[in-house]
Amino acid sequence: MNTKGLALVTVMGFILVLSLLMVPLALGITQLTSSTNVVSSKIGIGEARNGAVELARYHIATSSAACQGEPISNLPEEQLAQGSLTPAISCTSSIPAFNGDAYRYWDFYVTYKSKNAAENSVCFTGSAVEYFSQPKVGDIPTSTVAVYITHLEDKHVEDEPNCPR
Amino acid sequence: MKRNARGFTLLEVIIALTIVGIIAAGMLPALASLSKGSLNSELAYATPFVAQSALNGVRGSNVYTENFGLAATTPTTATSSNSKKLSVVTTSVMSNAPYSLSTITSGVGRPTVWGYNSSQPGGGSGGNNPPNPTYVPASLTLLATPLITPTVTATKIDVQYVANQENSCTNDKGVWRNYVLKDYDTFADDISRTGTSLTITSSQDKFINTTVVIGPMSTPTSIHVSYSKTSRSPSFIDVEWYRKEPKKNLCELVSVSSLGWNILRRGETKDISGTSSTVLKPLTGWFGGFKPNYVKLVFVARLSSTDGYINVTIPSQSTTTTVTTYDPIFRTITATPGDDWLGWDYLTFTVGDNTVVTIELNTDTSSVVLGPYEKGAHTITLKPFYFPKEPLNITLLASPKTPTLPARVSDVDIFYIKVMNENP
Image (cartoon, rainbow over all chains, first blue to last red; front, side):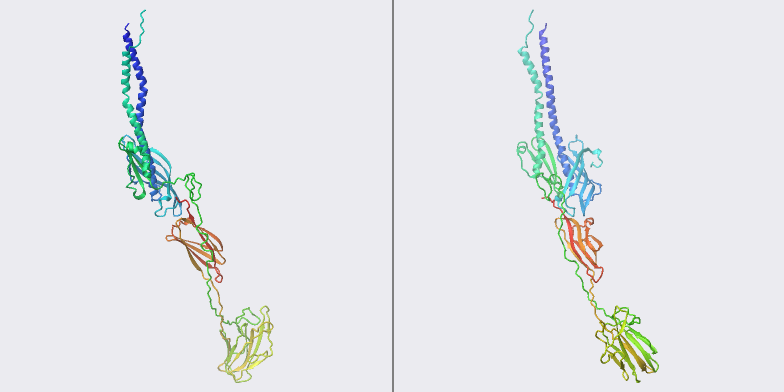
């Protein structure tokens, strides 16, 4: 009986078993590596979302246009390291007080285009309430205006017609 | 039976372990990548905080900067935002990986977050809700004194004697100050009256017996009598004085014993023969509680045929009466909004008796007229007018309903809305 052949098969089987045991470990390591790359992308879009909120707040607070319900889409684009933000705001209604408004209700749409071509454009859209602790008379002090973001969601640019293209 | 069971040779085991080691070595690059990716993830996570620290001027740990070259660029103001404080901060990992991240912060419109443990201005209860505006009165009273000062106008009214033929001693209408000339039976050709003058004329040389009643008169008044010279005697005037009590429709002849020259008692006569005029002085004094106020003159004379006349005249007299009238008057109060002004709230005022008030509210760019308002306390809401932040002029025009009584407006208060929740 050729016992050497049997030993070789046994060793080969042993090696195969050890290799199979390493496959989950290898896959785990690969996935961990991949996820760390995704983290950068997620932080980029997360910070872009925060920037979109601030950008909307800025344009709402500084808007001097009458509240007519029409989107204001001629706002400048802001360049970020991770992409660009193009805002549009729309005053939907207001509550007057004296010679100005006490509250204004806004919708905003900020399109984020990542520099990574593999990432799709995202439209950050939401609602905001602009609160005047003093009615607007001429150049108001900036401290008397507060913009509360009441809602925020991510949408596909194609799904929301008011999002800047 | 040959024993066939034996273990692996040392060589076999070494070969197997070597093969396993070679296979395992293939995962080393993946492990290295995992380590590098892990560091990148940590740095990526750290970049927003580094950016925020740079924005806020907070100097935190230098670990990321010194060990991994994680640095934030100087906060830059976006070209589109000019002076309105839209800041863009870009944080880059300089040495480890080509990774950069930008953060945007708006310098305007950021709500003030009121801490639960902090007390907010304006007496709010804390928490994260925006403080509510607090309305406070601007001033207690702007004007509490009578607004309208009476204007006294002295007007002279001349009281003219009115001659008519309606009043007689027995038909008094109570017009006490008026004099009445009334001719009774006459044989003259004509009797005409002009004002307070009565003229008896005769174109024939005949004897006349004409009676004239004058009264009532409250003021002693001389009666002037002139006539064409009479040559024939007897020519005389018979004067009789009467008095009439206002509440009694009764004329009583005044009997006096001695009235002096030109003042004739009852039945006495004054001989006017050879004269052309005389003055009958008034009968003064009180008789039975009343002054004689009617006089009856009986002319008995023969006038010439061509120009005979008798003129009886009551001299024109006038008295001056002072009448106080109150003219409409307006007054303007100016209220100037202060720094804490939010809006005009309401206006209160009190209108007195005999007063009608119209109010005009105006600023430099708007104007409203309200009213009229009559007696009582009034409150006008100013909110609907949306007056801008300009001095508010309140002009009150007060008119007396009856000109002889004053108009009055008082307690004019204006209230405005004040915000107490300004950011500290």
